[in-house]
Amino acid sequence: MPKHISTTVLSKKLGLTSRDLFAEFQILGWITSERNLTVEGFSVGGIYKEITKEGETIKYIAWPEDIELGITPQETNLLTATQLGTLFELSALKINYLLAEIGWAKKGELNKGWLATEHGLGIGAVQTEDIKTGVPYIRWPEAVKNNSTLLSTVADFSGEAKTNLSNSDVQAFRERFSTKYRSTDGHMTRSKAEALIDNWLYMFEIAHAYERKLPIDDEVYSSFYIPHGKVYIEYFGCENDESYGYDKNCERRKKEKLDVYQKYNFDLIVLEDKDIKNLDDVLPKMLLKYGVQTY
Image 1 (spheres, rainbow, N blue to C red):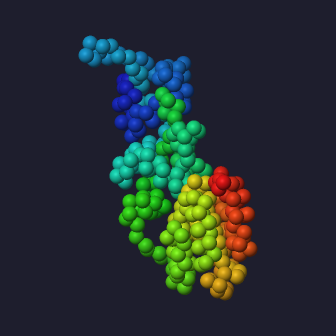
Image 2 (image 1 turned 120 degrees about the horizontal axis):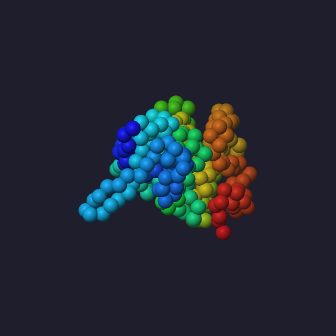
Image 3 (image 1 turned 45 degrees about the vertical axis):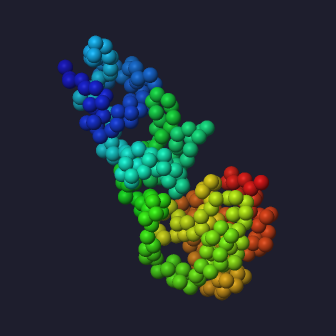
């Protein structure tokens, strides 16, 4: 007769938390949401055992020591937000908000729990839920702790970010077009048009970032980023903005940048020179498409 071990002992053997292993059992249909064995659970060898502790008899589920779960080594190394927080010395709540900021996670229905986005699933996120409460949460592949996008975001948040631009084209652009236009909220922009866009967002109380790096490995920066709607705004200044002047490479950069947005399926608003004088008319409609209200 095979040796039976508790779920806690089995979870340590597999490198999972007990909560995650119970979630796996529920997905497999071996236990109910109340953590009772199902017919399928009995069929794979699950049994009830009892232990007496401080005069009280406690019943628990035990499993064959050699039970096959079909969980790959990669799946046993999934990290929760709490575990990521321990690595980065941040709370689980802050980690979840940082993951949401870079577009990998979002709040669940009625603001309960967290759901992996398309981008999050693309880097290996596994969606699951608490077996008792049903509140969704996400487990992340161990490799995410070394992901450059997450590392740079944590560094930004912790005030430890360092500028280290290796892309020569981006560096050349930044050297040629310096930040010399101060917007109302203090952002230093590279053109008058960008300052007008920044001022418009500020006056309508829309939280935004200027030149936020896209959550990808390449050094690509957006003109503006609206965290509430996870939407980017691009103004290229290739036409009439005298702050940029004529730049034969502008159209090439514009095409390359638009290709990046399309490749990663990022939500994007593109503003042209003709839009700058009509921001009151065009921006509210464009932002509303992504759930950002201005009135």
